[in-house]
View 1 (cartoon, rainbow, N blue to C red):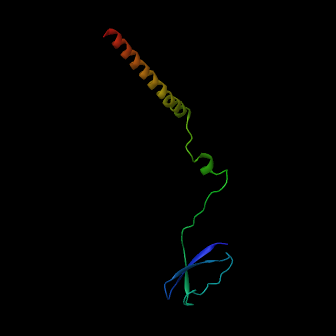
View 2 (view 1 turned 135 degrees about the horizontal axis):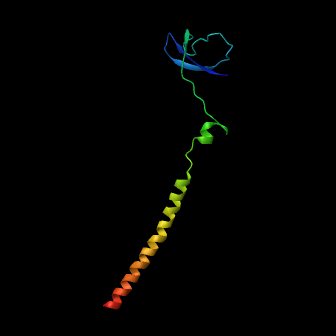
View 3 (view 1 turned 60 degrees about the vertical axis):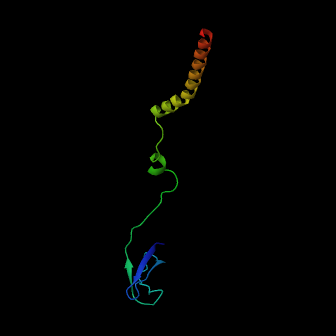
Length: 98
C-alpha cells in the first residue's frame, strides 16, 4: 500500500497515511479534524538483488592495465631491497679502497 502525505488547511500540520490506491475518501486531520489536502511528493525506490544495472555494472572493476599496474607496485619493494644491496656493495668497495 502506498503512503500518501496530507496537509491540513486549517492548522497547517502535515501527516502521512497508508492508503489503498482505490480508496477515494479524504481523511480528516489527525490533530484538529479539519479538512486536508493531498500533497504530491517525489517517490524513491531501492534496487535490491542481482540483475540490476547498479549491482552488475555499477562498481568499477579493475581493467587489465590496472591489474598490471598493481603488480608493478608490488615489485617496487623488491627494487628497494636491490637498491640497499647496491649501497652496501658500494660501501664495501669504498672501505677496501681506503
